[in-house]
Image (cartoon, rainbow, N blue to C red; front, top):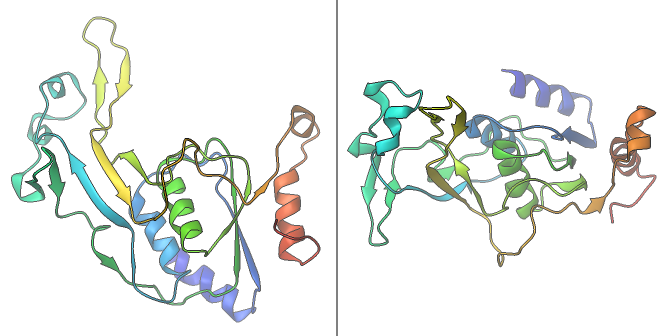
Length: 219
């Protein structure tokens, strides 16, 4: 309801540009990221090329926060492939996805930084690869081709009781291009300095609003 109402209001006001601030956003449920993008596209799209796990269960799961009934993935959720992995078959982000109504066709500017990760960075990667968003800010914290996430039990080391998150699922985003040794890079780099923080200045937002108003160029 929030997304539908928000985009309805943007369209009623004929809003020409939208700034989405995903700085310091460490993600969450990827279905929400997909739902946001669905309002920004006008046709069917793919979110994932695939999701894989190595095993239905792991020995270390007995030292995690997972209850016994959730320490083994049901076989109907994943099938063995020729690469020695298990292909996920029942995730809602797999397969062809449909656009959502109301759609928004205005310009989209997304603010990112080194703490833009997980589902937030998935949205950034998909939106940017489909030329639906201009990125402003600093390099994001994710491989633009996918994430290790999805199924993330918390391992509790038996002696020290230190807790460690261990992602055991690999997701491949439906983006193209050759792999690089860099993370998601902004189209317009704007660095935040210590002086900016102390003075409570937001240079990236200032640039984004100027571009959205036509006062600056995006590149």
